[in-house]
Length: 342
Image (tube, rainbow, N blue to C red; front, side):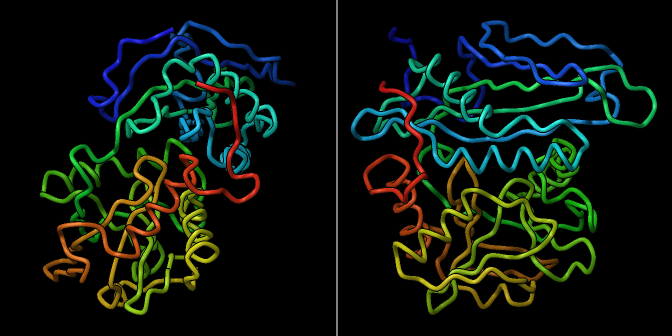
């Protein structure tokens, strides 16, 4: 069935699609799960998610490849990460194999909303899970819902990729030995005030530092950092408080195995940042967002790659990974999961 969507005009927002997936945990086991056309959720006012923020989520995309297949990119890593997130918040993990099958089902059911190859648009997939039963004392809920919805989205950068301007934030994104390494809704709530404040002061994003010493680079509110040295080595910050980005891990593999670049995953001191040639933010939405400037309390860090376009190495990484996702470049074994044909 043809849908009335101008793919070239799509923004990065929510567009309701016909089907979503729902499975419920009754305190002992997950039910069989099913697709539904009902996009409304009814829960108690005392539900665990509303009282104590028991919620975790994931984000991935479905793509139309050059030869007309509809595929997802490394969804096994999203399934694995969601299991870890759920365990950290004392929630019953939704089994990884069922996660993958549920993603397949909901994408196939909404195949008409997967944008065509070459449009620059994709189908964003949002799996999420929350405590649904009543909780008034501080403890985990007994019942949960696992759901997946989809929405077609346009390119993250409308009108072309332009380098971002960041600031070193005075706020902390996560607590030492806290939940910064999992994809929990509460972590993103923690960063809301910081990002609004950054925008109000003319910045695109925040650079958060490690919460213990505030001397090492961590991440932004929703993306990992990737740096390029002047001799073209790739460096990504290492910390127990950083979310293990699927995109960042994939870019590092591409850098090493496809492009022959050296990759270092280590602590990165803030004082080292001015020595880098390029900087980018890695995430599902944009793959790599180039960074042109960082302001550190009156000090301006301007990367040699400049404010006009992506740096040479960053661009090469972006083109290679998106080429793999879209089927233009052969993928490593297991990276592409075919669902159906458009």
